[in-house]
Length: 203
Image 1 (cartoon, rainbow, N blue to C red):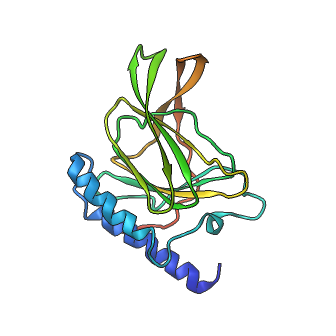
Image 2: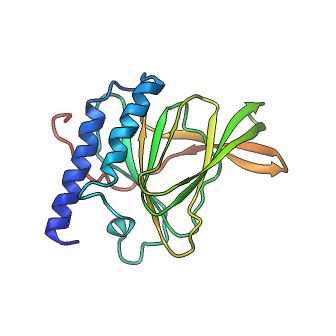
């Protein structure tokens, strides 16, 4: 990446964080989440918006990655860029009770949404809908029963997405298929790669 592109991308990352800093925080209602979604979606078309290729290191294009935008995010929110290599899929998973906004920036991500019910160890997941997120499309969610699975259906192109959560998503539950229509809960810890910006003085 040349210097001009690097500066533009850094400016874009700071614009994302500025939008989050101006947000009311982890207790936001649906209307406030939709308003933040709208402002963040506009940035999907702004100069400096990263592409999947811009986060790839040589020889590292086949690994899923989670890059925090900064080591500290104000207002009780966190923000990450996620790189989905060709063919990568997550297990169905919750978000530790956090609300979230997930926006496609580059490529197309399929999102299957579910509502969890029943026993905590062997829950039932009722499929609600499937979304195909192209650049600028977003999924907004809240509620402890929300579960989704994300998949890059392309065998050749990577996907890049922006994720904003109402807190730090460090621990969550994934759901492994146990039998047709039955799942087994598995506690997971979210692993992160390097932060893309370093914030100073909490800003």
